[in-house]
Length: 486
Ligand code: NAP
Image (cartoon, rainbow, N blue to C red):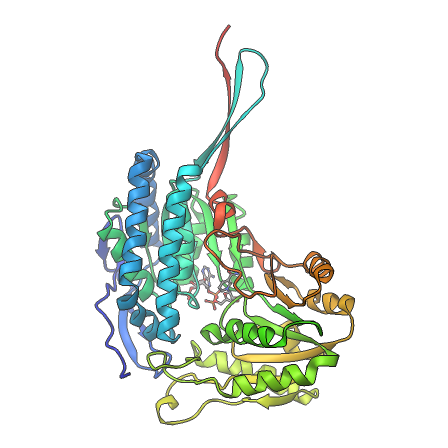
């Protein structure tokens, strides 16, 4: 397929229901990672525009919170319907700005639709509690929205992270100021156009782009922003955590991961290989829950490795708008990071079994393409054992016993996703209990669904997205002690 043209998409800030330019901030180019071309320029905001967006969200909060629930639900469902209907035509926007294959981009908008539909349904079930009380009293516990929510999202899922935050925030009656990643703002802008079309009242959702430091600081310093939800790197999460101390904000931090993927000797090896390929090479490994350390029981290493190498060799690398399995990496420095990790690992005895270099060829010349790579003989003294990779590299590590596998898997500062394959039921219990991770896939890699809790422990952050746990993050509890008779 030839390169699609960038569909018409707004490039301005969206504040209080209006598309506006930034005050004297100029514009920023959005670059296509597949060929280095500039797709368009987007408006830039700083403290002044972010403050206006917060004020707009604050002004809109009362009306949105009080809006008849059926009306709120109808608007959210309408947004979900529009995302579903338009997924096909929105997909090129994401592929052009982020690089992932078109089928993944379309799937992500469909997931966005599912997030809105699920949150709309759940908005009807935000039950409180009554608690047994002394005579003449009722103890009532209500769940209420928090107020203005600041949301900051990364580039790897330019629609998924936006909808996963905004759908529950709005469904629970809050208003939002979003700052999408500077690398991939266009998918978020397209989603905001749908908000308008669905009749979301002015000021309920606002979008600012620009200096992330300045916008982040304005959000964290504002006492009007009562909740901050962030997905991104652990380092930036730590900064936002510190900055939010003065205003004592409620926080959700979805940070980095370094997922272990354990294959026991009794596993269905074909299933494990297929699961690894699907989860590792989705979005070219630029996924916080992508398997990053593959632990294989020593007795099956050669069989597992052989099957894996065969499949990985055949993965097609190319532009996301062609029929490919793997697109480009987001920026050139992502390749530098992979090459540093590989250099260190090779110097310490690791062996490149497939890939291990930039992809070449006419159409790949100006893009950030790297070959899917398998690294054998990986050990704990290598940087790749401890550092998040965020690219298409599969490091293979062997183990002998279940206890050793659990210990190796837990040897990480991160604690987001983990996976293991075995047919032994008692081992399923032992390993899923032993893994210090927020999510565990047992013989399964699909661990992110609109209805199930997503999030991590340790340096992967805290708070949960999706499911009723995700809705709770945007609610606060109020206790009413009612004396109803003298
Ligand atoms: P990042 O550099 O932390 O950026 C994430 C977002 O934070 C972007 O919008 C960025 O804006 C903004 N930002 C950067 N510095 C900031 C600051 N000082 N104050 C406020 N905002 C700031 O992460 P990334 O490179 O985009 O994403 C990759 C990371 O995200 C990986 O570590 C990955 O594991 C993690 N991730 C986690 C999850 C999860 O659910 N746990 C999901 C996806 C990704 P600009 O882009 O405009 O600078």
